[in-house]
Image (cartoon, rainbow, N blue to C red; front, side):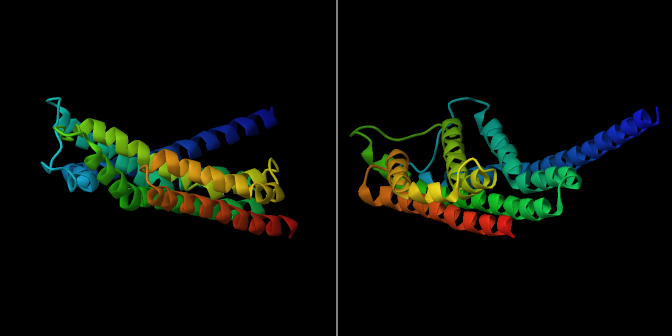
Length: 243
């Protein structure tokens, strides 16, 4: 009976803690959304700049009457989600940390920080490096008599997908480290697979970059370097595990 009461009390405290963490995360999410919503149109203009400078007419089009309102609204919400991801991850970590051992706590926190940093680095790389190359190519490859005039909703969907793809690509070191730390793959195997990783990096460059050697190489090299960072990071994990 006493054990039952103790278990019920622990479950109630656990649910209360979970609810508190969820409230914190939702409050910060919608608070940032309320702020970004005020700058929604400026956010969209900033997102469209890499394409606008290559368009002859200098503007995008809206094919739906409500698009000029809902598309920036959608962008503001997506931006607030991306900005609050580190805080949300912190709430998750704070919730599960009491159940972790000391060495696990010390490992997870740097992983969360590094993961968030790499994700934002991937987004920045896509916006400042890939977008200018890609949109310059697309604007100049159009057939004669065709004027490139993308719809604002289509452009948002396309760019968000690319940003998320590059954000995920930059998580390669984290994924490698997790695979090694869980024992699914050894560090030696990743070193052995280095040549395949280089080929894979250039395949990714061929798929995501404009069809010229310079652009494809410019994308392939960072992907390969991320693989090498994963190998270096795995060495730190292996050392810590041995200690």
